[in-house]
Image 1: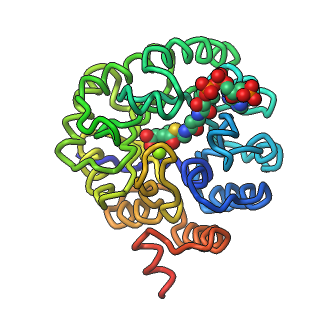
Image 2: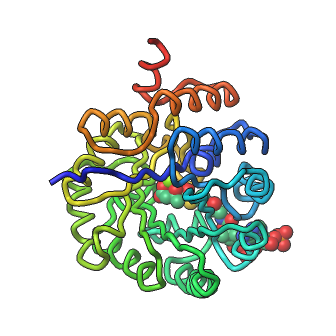
Image 3: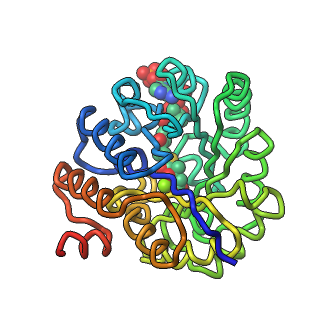
Length: 298
Ligand code: HMG
Ligand code: MG
């Protein structure tokens, strides 16, 4: 049975912008986040505290957090890869911290320069400290439906890493189809394997739309009881460590589908689409989203 409402986690200002070749100014990043909140988003990923040598687009996340007018009831999570990142996030006043691991050894090495086991050892003290400070923790697992270096990934490998992040105290685990190769039945089997270890209500899905399968995968996930969906305005982005991967499923596409199904999101689609058009102008690119194209042509 389908949920009556879905919580959308907007990842465009982080996952989207981190892989755009044109870097967006701090002022534009702030305006993007505030525009998304005005459109009704209640969780907007604001950036990451990672090495600026690895991901230069996310430098200045502290200035972005300092610049936004934080709205009551809205979460502004940031990615943190280690204690150094957590310290920077603390100094910037981030209340929501996301740690990120992978279900693929090769991807873990390329993305965060360590093995899966090393990454979990590295995240454990980060999680402990963030929880002691009463920050909310989210955990990501990458490559849940395939790896750019290893190909197929076993659902059990995804379940193991998800379980480890859950045991560290993550309130939510987001399952990332980093390269967008997943299809609905595969997605269902993977989620079922994870849900044997982590309660379904604490799982989120994070589909990149490289092969145009994201909406179908989301629908399949909702049918299983998933209630949290990650998406990126205008379908921005990709992944710097997964060549050829395109952006997240567009928030416009998800909201249009859910509106049509009578599933509430609290998001104003027209306002959202306007925010998308503004950032696309800054990036000098066309929307990946069919819904965004259709709304722009109206
Ligand atoms: P490393 O080189 O192994 O780290 O990188 P290190 O501890 O040896 O430090 C090396 C240098 O980095 C030092 O600077 C540190 O200070 C600096 P130097 O002395 O050379 O000048 N450093 C930092 N600087 C700022 N903030 C930090 C930090 N930590 C170290 N937190 C590291 C390891 C994890 C830092 C690096 O690999 C990194 O930053 N990776 C970033 C990866 C990333 O952001 N990927 C994209 C996000 S994940 C994603 O997109 C997937 C997701 O969307 C889900 C999905 O779709 O699958 C979430
Ligand atoms: Mg992603």
